[in-house]
Image (tube, rainbow, N blue to C red):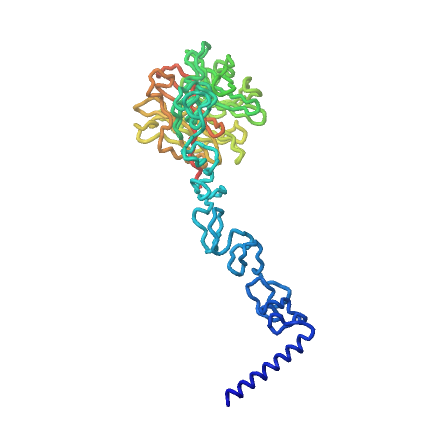
Amino acid sequence: MANLLLRFAFLGLLAIIVLAQDECCDEGQDVDGDFYCANENDCNDNDPNVHPGAPELCDGQDNDCDGVLLPGEADEDGDGVLGCASDCDDANADTYPGAPELCDGQDNDCDGVTPPDEADQDGDTYLLCDGDCDDADPVTYPGADEVCDGKDNDCDGAVEEGGGDEDGDGASACEDCDDTNPDIYPGATESCDGTDDDCDGFPDVTGGVSGAWNRTACGALVGYDGGMDTLGDDQPSIRYDSASGTYQMWYRMIDGNAYAHAIGYAESDDGVTWTKYGAPVLEPGAEGAWDAVRLGYPSVLYLNGTYHMWYHGNENSNKILIGHATSPDGIAWTKDPGNPVLRLGEDGTWDQSAVHAPSVLFDQEDALFKMWYAGYDATNVRIGYATSPDGTGWMKYDTYVLDVGTPSAEWDGKRVVFCRVKKIDGLFHMWYSGDGVENTFTYEIGYAWSTDGLSWTRDDNNPVFSYNIGDGGAFDAYMVYAGDVLQAGTMFAIYYSGAPTLSGPMSIGVAINDAPLAATPQ
């Protein structure tokens, strides 16, 4: 009986639904049986999951008939997989769940992992799977140009290194620093021509060493040539005139008569081949003058259209003082009427017997002329310091600023003399000559630096430049001294004096260095 009643109730409910449906769809049909008629905003009467108010599904349909698809329901790339169905790049038809991995740097199968060989670690746009044989080097990839680095840059399985020997000198273009000249290659013999024949980075130097002063193949550049300088030439002051591209040198001319030294002048287009002016450009004074017997150690500056020279002179063999002269062209000089501009110290002081070998610069920062000079107390020679607002009236520092080395047996234990000071990047750099009690007059060259020009720190590797021990016949086999340093680009040149014996003859040579300076303190 109960089952019968339940069956009648169900039939009654079904009749009500059918009647309602018939009433709803009088003017339309409910094809999909979702109880929504096409004429009542069922936007797809063929799909029971599509009708007003239906929940949105990931099927690419507007299920709730509101005219809007949810993000990810469009198949933008036409690969048959929707974004909402885990297509991780719906703009790429090659990327969808289960897709085969391609060599394109993409996670094609959408598993969250890009294969390691598809990363471009070096940014050269080539992948390991694409043939990049070194994905840590941006200059190594298929088709790259071969460079001289010992690697297979073009990934063809071979290290070509430079591609040929154009000049036929036996050195590949990779190792040859000039593959158009058969006389230039690693190991070639250097000649004095201003070129780097052996490809060591140092023109005119055989087997150059970085951070050291390297002698050139040029030997002596300036020396005795039949003029009044019968004992040679030394103590150069060097300047490069950028306006004319001319190297200028003022130097001491040494006559066989010890009391006839004068100042000479030479010019060069390349810093190697020099042409002497001929006659001295500055000569000793008249008899009885403070500089009547000999002149030496010129220090030349060019300021505001005028050349200034500071030099030492003496009226007898011991009393050496410092004078000043000016010139419009570096050749015709007028001595300062107030000479000497630097005199001896009082009795008992460190410079009581001689002041000589001046090195002068104009410090733009302080608007002062600054002079470092040698002083003699009848026992030792040391280096002192003085300043001037005009280059003629000088105020001495109260004592020397560079003492002789200790102990006295040190290479510079007796004399420190013939200094040249340059200010570069806020730091003062000094090259000076020295000898000891056991090596009198066998001068060598040392280096020191200072932040203020007063307190100096010697280089731990002093002397930084020594006489030419390996060549007894060289012009500088006995001593090297009185060097002036000139910077040319990244290279530095020291024009120095040398002699094969104590008695000469003296000559001027050049050595070069790519890194001679102390680092600026931080």
